[in-house]
Image (cartoon, rainbow, N blue to C red; front, side):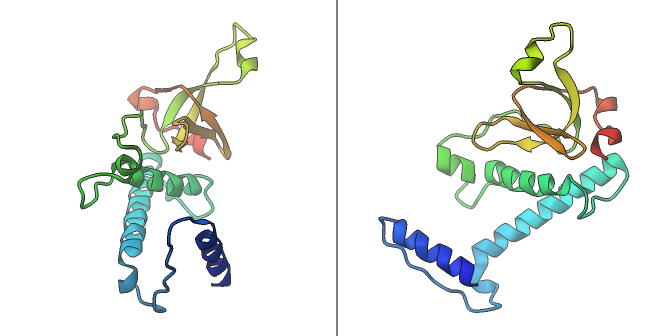
Amino acid sequence: EPEMTSILAELKRRRSQRTLLRRAPRYSHQSMGHAEQANAALEALVRTLCAKLKEKYGREVTPRDSVLPWVLRHAGWLITRFRVMESGRTSFFLSTKKNYHGEVLEMGEACWACDPTPRAGEAKLVSRWTKMIWLGKVSVSDEHICGVKSDAHKIRSVRRCPEEQRWDATLLD
């Protein structure tokens, strides 16, 4: 793949440390063991998250659903923070030297999200809380990502809905 080769060559050029570029033999999944294990873990977690959404909403998640990219993104985020490697540590711990302790909701559950915009505070009698679907978290700021239909927002504060209100299909469609 010429694009990948040029990206890797540029990366090697910019690094101050010695960098060796290696090519795996074509169609040799065994030579890409760690990458293949990561792919398998991601695929399995995506299937699990989609099965949970099917259980809660009563329908399959299809490639055309607006929630699928968020499921993929969230699966990677979960693996980084919670998958324990052979070393006994998570990737998050290895890069930050601390375990992750942030608030995490279930993928696709309805929650109350506080509107963070300054204009929300101007209307004092209007509630700043909106019912939305929880889609994940922002890696760098630890904000929540919430959405309604195909519209997503970064949110600082969320509150869980009561159990009987957590799976509202009208917010997902």
